[in-house]
Image 1 (cartoon, one colour):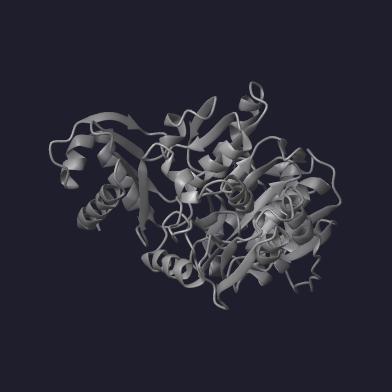
Image 2 (tube, one colour; image 1 turned 180 degrees about the vertical axis):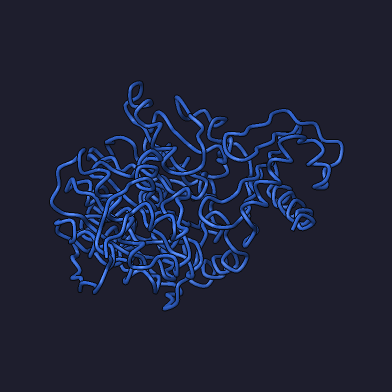
Length: 474
């Protein structure tokens, strides 16, 4: 039976979010995966020359079969499949960019295991929003999937990704450091311990899980916060490293077991690298500008495609360009020199680079002192899960119409609104410099709330107060 990509994709109900196509596992049928694959490859064929397409997966139970369906579609198109098995998304992206071939990552990142997704990379890097539209509107024809191929794993992506970072630093850089690796079900869990050990660290493996664990680096659970403190004390750790499900967003803790916010980690990494110009989402901490360590900062919508879209413009004026997100993912927009060695640009989220650069910066003083030396602005974020996207949109629309009235309904008294930013959702700055930012998730039916204040407890209290009052809308 002959199928048409646009029709299959539309019927599946799968849509692009801030990071790839996402949906319920049951929506990612073999034909749906094949439709996305055909649409992706045919949409870029006229722009690039290639004979191979690479695939990798995360540790979700549904990912292997989805990879097989994508591989079958690649074979239908006459291309060779290169399969890297379970590796971090940035490892797949990096090796594919070096080989100048497109790739597909089967992952749902941090969302629950009953959902999954596909990320697409052209030979020159992550697809743009324009590419997403081209995929959704493609009308390529293909044969319905019958039978799935057996895939043989290559270790090339894993080894090249590890070499990318271990080659930058002295092999004794971490000598004397005790590093905990919170492994859970991360796609990179088999790579991280050898990488840190290669740089001299003593590594303690922590809580590997045979079941998928949906770690959200932007909304760390209370349980994971307590785990880090307990581990730090029990094992006398200098550092804890972890990531989300597909290994592109870092989660790191200092000597006290306190998890760093992703944008603070990104700031310290960019500063340690001597980056001149940054592109960061509007939700990031305002300390990025107020620390005055960068020549230029551009604010974007939330999502790596928007950050990446700014790199070309920045590169025309600055030699070193990078970006990062509130969730911690660091994007290197230009080739950069570290320790007299060149590290190639990797314009997609990566977890390892910011972790290692932080440790390099912490050779002379503890991590918590590096953090305390920054302008003391504190951010907090959380989400209401299973919150209909339509309801989120209605709430945000109402708040835009009358921000003061909305804040009053949320429990604020005698507030004065200084600025209203609608770059992505609704971001309100109050006269006392508190910030309230509401946004519907682009990956799942969730409503996210980001806050910023001069006090962490107050920032957390704002989120709790807003979520408590938002229950009236449910």
